[in-house]
Length: 197
Image (cartoon, rainbow, N blue to C red; front, side, top):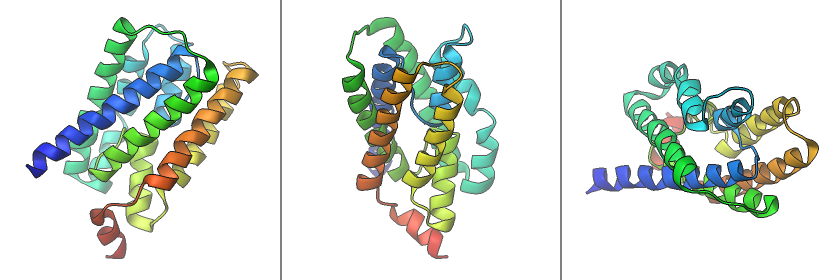
């Protein structure tokens, strides 16, 4: 039952993140980490977000395996692959026209709550999330701080391809995501034990 609960939580987390990213994509807004870089690259290449997100995360599996272990890496690979697939399905079958403020607020919240589910079940969505989980487990640095730093770096990169209004709305999404993670994420027992040891 515990295993079933874990994998169902990963699926639910990925669904929340996929829907949040889809809402942000609908308004051409950005989000943090490798997902944000993938969104930027969709404007510069012919690849979709799902394809780019999967490819961008390939180098991080080695880091995850070496520093966070095979269980974390397997769950992260599953989550990244599922998110990439869900993103492709939503791109094909869900079309919407949404106000950018609503998109930023709701998209940021959905991604934030999805990440919390993944973090609590020893998984991530790769890239910056791997670093966030590692720093939290090893040094006790809250995941929201690492996420916010990554958000700011993505914003700096985004200046090259998006206009100022998109940047402002994207910043709102970033702040919303970090607020959700900062207020609701509590390092699970395995992370606290690892940090103390």
